[in-house]
Length: 173
Ligand SMILES: Cc1cc2nc3c(=O)[nH]c(=O)nc-3n(C[C@H](O)[C@H](O)[C@H](O)COP(=O)(O)OP(=O)(O)OC[C@H]3O[C@@H](n4cnc5c(N)ncnc54)[C@H](O)[C@@H]3O)c2cc1C
Image (tube, rainbow, N blue to C red; front, side, top):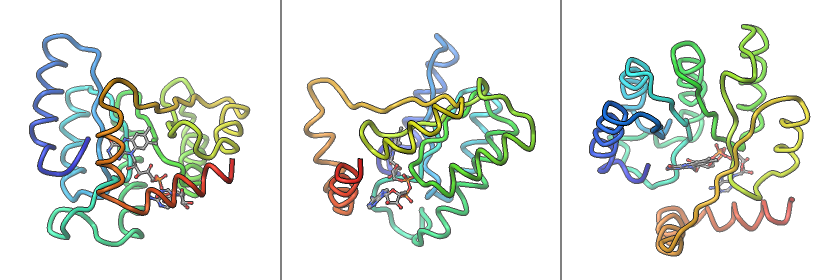
């Protein structure tokens, strides 16, 4: 999922493919105000959702401008997905959020085969190993194909902090 102007078209495409062929999933960004209603629609259609915080610079009329609000909304949406979603994917490197997810599934006896964690390849390998050792499913995200460079540059241009993120985490792991 890229910037907010593409969300309607992307979700329409996902819904159409799901109806005709199946086997598709959607990404929802917790920083967008609209995401709760998008998640409700996707859950109604039994389309699996990958929940991320959102990586693009968005205006405050469409997205929470403060990280604390994004984090809070992430947890709210994550809970909704655990309750009503189809095989949710918790895509985050935020230890606090991952801890809350683990606690939530333990308290409600949600077994590890009913959801998965997702992280970017090479980021927080320590946390990745810990989750797998604890019996949780983890999928690693690897952009591939000919268009990887423009994709990468688009991400960096949208949020220069991603360079710091990349370097810090490469050093950490
Ligand atoms: C599998 C997967 C798929 C994704 N797909 C999409 C997508 O389709 N569309 C989209 O918009 N985004 C996507 N993202 C990116 C996502 O929205 C976030 O930008 C990214 O994952 C960082 O958020 P976080 O949840 O790890 O939490 P954060 O709170 O941002 O990070 C947790 C910790 O990681 C480090 N960190 C993480 N991000 C940064 C940063 N930018 N700068 C500095 N330090 C950082 C910090 O140490 C921080 O304490 C995806 C992420 C994953 C893992």
